[in-house]
Length: 510
Image 1 (cartoon, one colour):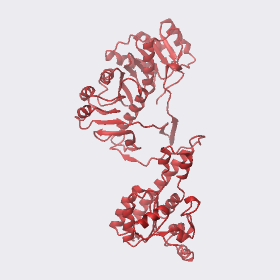
Image 2 (cartoon, helix red, strand yellow; image 1 turned 90 degrees about the horizontal axis):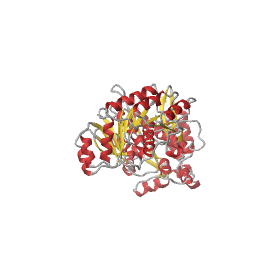
Image 3 (tube, helix red, strand yellow; image 1 turned 180 degrees about the horizontal axis):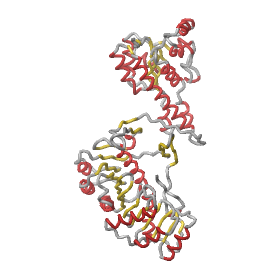
Image 4 (cartoon, rainbow, N blue to C red; image 1 turned 45 degrees about the vertical axis):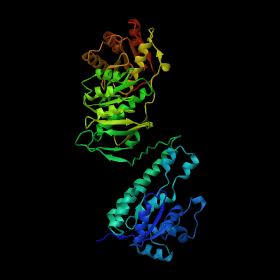
């Protein structure tokens, strides 16, 4: 059975005319009757091609400032009629409704208008009514009609009609219908999320149309995809394609380094979403070397990130390390040349981009959505719980450690000294285990913990952690507070001349 249908008539009503001219010329060459409206009609006329104004078949002009042009039974009847349905065929004749075999629409740019910071009035006017209705009608009736719903699909449609002389298969019509409902659902999602920005309805809608298939997921036997606009966030200078795990680590690196935006040169090395080394120094080279000293073993195959330009001296040091990705706001020309010496090493320039304000993850048969943890602990919010107060250096280290702790898997303890990560205990089921892991690791890499500070992502229910830390040389502690047994930890610190501050904010990260 031949399910192909030849296009004999087309309705064209588009916002973007880019790439439209070759399609119009090809349709004209194939003797297709063309209907159009407004600016598109003028565009086709200017090409010297005959076009029938929609108002000539509806007997209604474009009204309400262009808000109503195509919303008419003669237009939608022409699109929605079933060509193999006896009743439909009879009504088409009775009401003198023209057949429409193809609909070409490009919607008003709602999302771009919102992103431009336009006024609410301008944004509302960019909510397409007629166009979205045409798309839904033509896609629904894919058995008889082909719907081209975006300027992105113009080239493919032109290739189809050129190769097959206007004969479109059912398979192609159905595929274009799927593309069309992808466009319409994404468009409606964007509009809903704009309106749901203040008094929020308890509804979750997300739509991403930029999908990239990855080599595989977390493991080779899993499929993986990235949906998002990677190029909006980064300029990729060099290296292989990013994997699923690379992307997760890059995300963790960006979120961590955002805590140090605008500060002195800070360098971090991450592995499996956790910082294994991070330091802040006067130069980026010093910061890198101090970060690497935090755990030179785990740094192998890690993700590197700097909050300032990477220079030649730093690049020479990095080049000796096998690492997957290096991220920075910029690279000097010489640094880029050096780092490109490894063909697979990925180099990314981070652009100034606003990140989403919520986090989303699958859970059971649904999703969990929450606000991002946007609180960064600062000196102003601290409560001094002990008689001993941290000195200025300890206070700086406490806040430094707290930023790292916030971005490390719970349960976690972070040990820092001189704005350098000494070690952290990550993802432990017991806070005591996390502390012991951190101490053992710090000692393994020859860190002297005398005068170090400790950060905890949650409160201490017992004084055991402060006691263990004290015995290791830690002199100051930062934690949320809020345990009914806080006083036990406070008493221990007072007795042993330790300083402890409360932030009032828990930073669990599961």
